Image 1: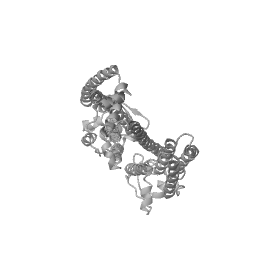
Image 2: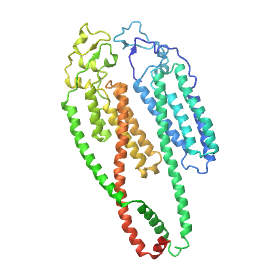
Image 3: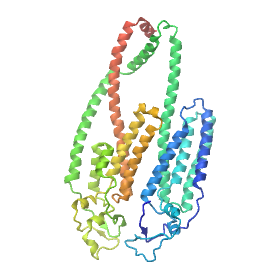
Image 4: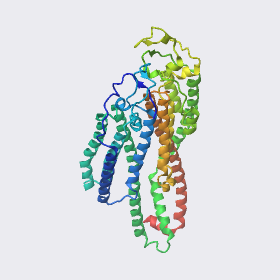
Length: 502
């Protein structure tokens, strides 16, 4: 894992080492047993049995959490509350510089325990427990019908499962394994994954119900029309297809369609204007507008980190995101320029002259200073921290890609886990990009969090916005084609004309 400096004030990481109240093996065994029993009971209590095994969805969720949690743990390298007791660092001959011991060695010989003591953020136990508890509860309510035994069991077990998930998180604090913030983030992350997979599962249930109801309607229609059209086998398909088209045609008002066409044209013009103006505004904020000068506190440890090159370079990010909508990039640059928050490496790049004077003491806010650094480009960038543009662009592309795979690539569903694997890859790359901005000292955690939220919101909005326009175009062309073809079929086929009259 990442080796972080040891703080001189060790009160937050000087707790005694304790064994886990809920060992990982016991937790996973209980999760598997409870999931199998609960899911089996619910499925056999319902009349419609799903063709897909639910264990696949639960397995995907747990694998996603496992890979993401472990990756972030190793990238962040936050020290556990019991780090001093486990590591036993030799700091007697070390000098505390800027409130940190940068060079220290662990006396503890058990390397696995030392490595584990550096993996605090965020709590994997809490993420697993909350994810499985919440997803099983949601599953029980979605699958069980009203007044069924499954619904009553779900009502009874939901509080118990949620309490068990919270209990696991609390034990991670009392066992000195995690800080409070680690547990909160782990619980929030597990809840988000559970809600996302529950949304996918809900759509799958709806698709199964629609297929079954459609099959029943087709069988009923064939039973009603078979004696009439027994002389011609092909007419059955024509009749059913024609009736459906006629019903769709009758539900569409010509006046509304005309309004829809004009609105589509207006949306296209609006999109064109916005895209052109965004390019101009982005270049304006990026190249010519200089943001206002902001001061800093002398004892601000969040801007004393050394300067590091980007792990994910801007060029690689643009290629990965396939040139996402420039509006979101402009928004991030505008916020950066107006807010002017210092990056974590600000002091290392700027080298303000006041640091050499005695006037710069703790809690003094310095507004009048001059940067003595030679790289003007880096000095300008060192004050553009909020929000993270890398995180916003990465999650914009990942969100758009995730929704597209979920709703548009029907041909890929025969490959089973391939769509889920692609979605997981996109989210993982975006997460890695966002986390790299923190351990590269280019952004504070809250900068990355806000950038991530902006990217997700813009990705969701623009996906639905573009898809709605395309759907309207397809509907208009299908209606025109169906209208002309159906009139010809009815005129040339007396049997269909007689059936339509009936």
